[in-house]
Structure formats: structure tokens, C-alpha cells
Image (cartoon, rainbow, N blue to C red):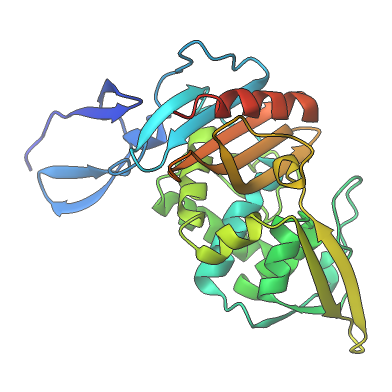
Amino acid sequence: MIVILMSLFMSGCGKKYENAYDVNSGISAFTFGESGNDNVAASFAQGLCVASVDISEGADLSRSEASGLFDVVNRETILCKNANEVLYPASLTKTMTAMIALKYGKLDDVLIASGNVAISESGAQLLPLKEGDRMTLEQALHALLMYSANDVGVMIAEYISGSVEEFAALMNKEALSLGATNTNFKNPHGLTDEEHYTTVYDLYLIFNEAIKYEKFNEIINKEVYELNYSDAQGNIKSKELHTTNAYLSGEKNAPEGVRVVGGKTGTTDAAGSCLVLLSNDTSGNPYISVVLKAEDREGLYDQMSGILNNIP
């Protein structure tokens, strides 16, 4: 067997990074997959942004623990801070849950809530669902992404995999397939678990995959949705869902020249305030931005607006 010494040159934010191959690298972009060639290893980062060092270019990224801005078309990392630091994602987890549901489920399938939707954690966002409640997968995805209903996350997980545990295993399998090697999921909603974590860079990888689904983009762009579903006896239950995204609700304004398409918010005591966004520049080019562990909601949006200011 031929032993090959390898150096990796990858470009991100217009710069080159030189890293020797290391199977234990903490940087997801520098891990490798099978290439079909005995002499060549294909990087997960082919065709993707790379984030190996902090890049601020004069931007103030001090209001959060970790953050990043990624140019989807040019595959360029514009800003990043602690992009490979393992942190709690809170409800940003639901971007992976939605992506898997769209990949393996059918939008018109009817989901039935089991008794496991009765989440008792204090402060958890709930629809609330009752055992026997029914709705389509499409309806459930609106409740998951717009309203951030944790109980709906459980219902989706059981629909796809039969149990939360099996769904978490599928989430981790899908994360690895995307190159998100610093991620481990334990549930479909993001309520705090010490073994449930990810990074800014891995969230970029996951969100970059999720936005390939037209329905995902459609849902995260909505401000209001009328949810009509039924209980176990067939009685209609209605709830008007409002987005948790302050840019879409009009509470916060994006910088001039930037259009926020949508995204996902997340907040827990352990994770702090978190946000992942898809935004377009004046030419319609897409950018993904991530903020993890801002101290509070005000700081979160101040940090995100500062990041969005760096979209060319």
C-alpha cells in the first residue's frame, strides 16, 4: 500500500489555508470521504465554503460566541468566529429535522401524535399537541419551522423513524454524509441535552442542504400561517402561526440592499439566542449566516444585522 503525504489547499473568503490531513481534525472541512481512487481522497469541502480560522475583516463579532457568513454561489467564507467550536444549537436543530422530513416523507401524509408529544420541560415551545391529534406533514413542517413547536418535532421524528432515538440516529447519519463531523444530535427539536451539539460551520453545511428543497424555502419565508388540524375524534382545531423571525415579522430591519428570505431561530438557557438565515443580495445571490450563543435576543439581532452588513 502506497503511503501518501498530503497537504490540502482550500480557498475560503479569498484566502488559502494549508493543512496536513488529520483524521482527528476538529475542522469539518478537512475530513475526507471515499473518492473511488486509491491515490486521491475527496474532501467534504469540495464545492463548499471553508472556515478554518477566524475572519473578521474589521467586523464586530463580539456579541455572540460563534458566527459566520457564507457566500453560497461563490463558495466563499466572508466572516467567521469560532466556526468549529462545539455549542448547543437549540431550535436550529429543526432545520435538520425538516430537511430529513422532506427527504424521506411525503407532504400529504397524515401524522398522528402519540403520547410522547407531552413535553414537560419548562419554557418549551409547544403547539400544544394532544395524543391522537392529526395533521399532514406539510402542516407539521409549518408548525416546526415557523412556530418552533417542539412537540411537533417529536411527531415528525416518530413518523419518519418510529422513535426519537431512531430519528436521532438518522440525523447523525445525514449530518456525517454532509461533512458535519462536529455534530451530534439526540433529539429532533433542540431542547438541551449535553450530548446534543453542533458548530457554526456544520450548521452552514446542514442549512445549505435544506435550502435545496423548495418547500423548505417557501415555509421559512412565511410570516403567518393558518393551521387547521383535527383531534382524535375528528374535531377541527385551529391556530394562527406567526414566524419567530423578527426580520420577517417586521420587528427588525435588514441592512439596505439585503433581503432576508427566512431562517430558524433558537433559544434555550444553555444555548443562548441563536439564528440561522438565508438572505439575498441586490442581484438575488444567496448567503447563509449563523449566530450561536448571543447573550440575549437584542444582542442576537444586533450581531446578525452587523454580519449582514458585510454582504457585498
